[in-house]
Length: 171
Image 1 (spheres, rainbow, N blue to C red):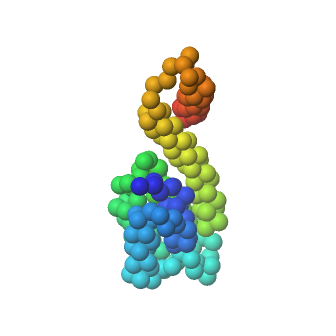
Image 2: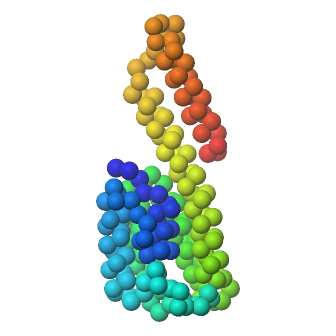
Image 3: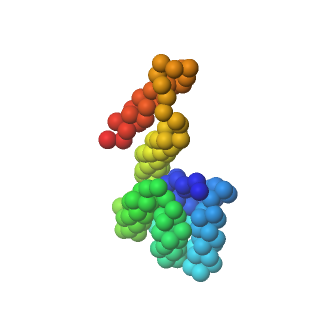
């Protein structure tokens, strides 16, 4: 199963599930729970323009708690990097408290979440590339560097070099 990205979780939190991948069953389940959260708490994150920049909407805190629970139970269990979801949820909780106290605006929260997402996506894509390279390397039979498949061995060496470069960036 394809892993859901942190971008997805943030988009679901920030936009009330307006962005999702239909190929991931966990996303569909989370989207359904978010709709239930909206029904239960009366808050729709897609309709927050009526609130001030330093003001939470009625039911927003409860809605977000419901959304966090959905991410924790539907998205995190199948994720390659669940700690990214946990960090994202904690950051969103903190920024939501700051909006409530008037020290952060909705626009600032959105910008900070986007910055977090960019870093998290880079990490997730690098980890995914590394996993794909490792899987490909394990599926390939050993090659004789001087035999009829010498060119293939050179390609495998190049792939190993790329894998090592990705690992170095992750450190």
